[in-house]
Image 1 (spheres, rainbow, N blue to C red):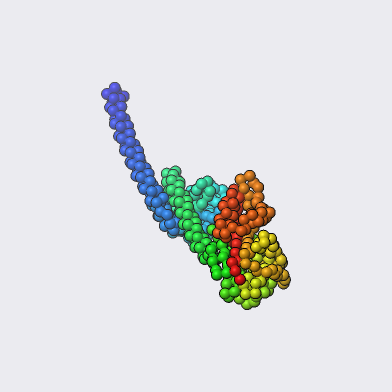
Image 2 (tube, rainbow, N blue to C red; image 1 turned 45 degrees about the horizontal axis):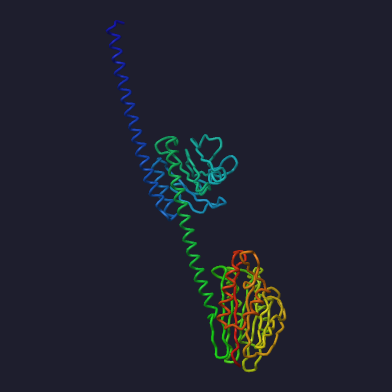
Amino acid sequence: MTNEMKEQVFVENQLHSEIFFKDRIAELEDKIAEQANKFSDISTIGTVITSIIELEKILPVVMESLLSIINAEVGRMVIFSDTGKVTSSISWGISEEITDSIINNEGMNIGSYIFKTREMLEIYDMASDRHWRVESEYAHIKSLMALPLFARNQIVGAIIVANKINGPHFDGDDFFSLEMIARFAAVAIENSNLHARAVAQQKMETDLEIARQLQKALMPDNVMDFDRMKINAFNSMAMQVGGDFYDVVKLTSDKFILIVADVSNKGFPASLLMSSARSLFRAYVNETDSLSEVMANVNEQLCNDSAMLKGMFVTAIMVYLDFKTGILKAVNAGHPPGWVSLPDGTIQNLKSGGPFIGQFPGMKYVEQTIPLIPGSRIFIYTDGAFECVDNSGKMLGLRGLRDFFEKNHRLPTETFIDKLTAMLDNYSADPDWIDDTTYLLAEIKRL
């Protein structure tokens, strides 16, 4: 070959190489442009997905966008509970029955596999795969990808796509797109869950506040000034609602019933039992003047509902005041003793009665009777008024409350209540010891 011919061949090779590289560069530029467009689309989709709050709207947007991006024929997205149970799902051309019929050699379907292993699954050719098979005769699954969804390192769902439209199987670009959209979807699901929990919490707090107001409405005013008697009372709940209550029932112009009771629990369950007990007391005090009968009847009714009570019980003290006959009667059902200070300074305990109510049917209760004397003070309360500790960890105790009563029982009723409340504020240092607290002081002005 002559030098001239060699030079011509060299030039032609250079031209072919230049054309090849130009074509290759153009191909790469197209690929880069395609990838850039895809990234832009994924970013836009991500922005849309993460801006949606309602879960039922998130799932179809994710599924439709994903199938379009990776050119998949069908897909399904599921949301898991903490135990792996599917709580929500969206299917796009593939039913739950079909995805559940895709089984591995251990007999595990795709959803269970993803939840258990927390790993992605890729099947290039279902017909020849050695580990997975389709048991449904209606399924036409050729290739498949499945990816778990994570939020705060917890698996919350999975995305399954099947059958590449423009190829035999999915490739690395498809997996990347799936992974990116899955991350956006997981964020959107977490946002939706947080929003749902916040809404539920707000609703619960609103409902509890309404329940608290209703419960407060069941109790009389904390200041009651009758012609022959003045009453000041205090009630505080450890939670929004509680199990303590007090009541003042005016039977006639001459007869009154004072009640303070305490349910052996706190919160909503206690409040329900409190409302039931209050209704029972009010029903039975209008049937008889015998406090022992009233307490026994309330006990029987609560015992009939013992399955509902789930171990809860009620302690209570009732005081009957008859201004016409000058008699004070009291019955105590497992409750801290009430105290009556007489004009001469002596203090009598109101502790006769029987056990707490609501657990033992057939119980009998004993009444205590003392004279009703003008100038007397009657103090009844719940254990929250003395089972409390100060900053040093010292409990006030029943003895401490009794000392306070002995020193201050001659104060005006409102002053007594205010002073006791101020003292108990210093015994609220430990939240574990904060309980529902109720106390009532009645001053007998005249017969």
